Amino acid sequence: MENKLYDYILSLGDNSLILGHRLSELCGHGPSLETDIALTNISLDLYGQVRNYFQYAAELAGEDASEDSIAFLRADRQHKNVWLVEQPNEDFGHVICRQFLFDSFHMPLMKQLCESKDERISAIAKKSIKESSYHERFSSEWMKRLGAGTEVSNRKVQAALDHFYPFVNEFFQETPLDKEMKENGIGGDLHAIKEVYFKNVHALLLEAGLTIPEPDWRQTDGKLGYHSEHLGFILAELQYMQRSYPNSDW
Image (cartoon, rainbow, N blue to C red; front, side):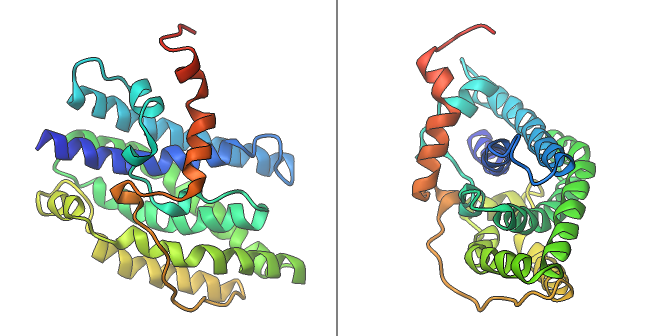
């Protein structure tokens, strides 16, 4: 059971790890100082969650495992994040749309995990939920601002939505691990979240004057360790220092 719990914790932490890194790439490149700082703070919030998850995972792994070894020494096939969070920062519309689609899933998941029978997961969720609420509010407001803004902003955020929307179904693909964690009262109920997710997302998209894309199929097996080409480039940058200078003291 500990091995499965370890894998489930990685699946929670890896989404925040990879999305946090994507947002960190934007530091100093936001469209305004206020927005730049907000995106950087969201990245830091996500990394705070990652540390909590990976500290717990390291305790379960035992031996010489640490939060750093879990974050920086795993190969791409050992990562359990969804494909959505790997997608590049094409423009501000892409950044906001990706964040909105993730936040709209992450917030109800955190609400469920607050009731987890695993005390550590519950504690992490309770600590994270205020941050997740702010993230969802931030990205939702920007979606409305861009969608109902100028012709250019509407067109760009619609293009981002058309690109990202096929990826969201992966959130709700229940793996055997997801099912077991749910049945044991540890993990979230993805089917219940799905109903809330699409109701909330569709309502906001219509309010923002955006067109809900047609359902589409997209190769998405990130939870099983199969990723897009983007993850390799992310890990090359993310893991460079630890792999080049192992066991360094800072």
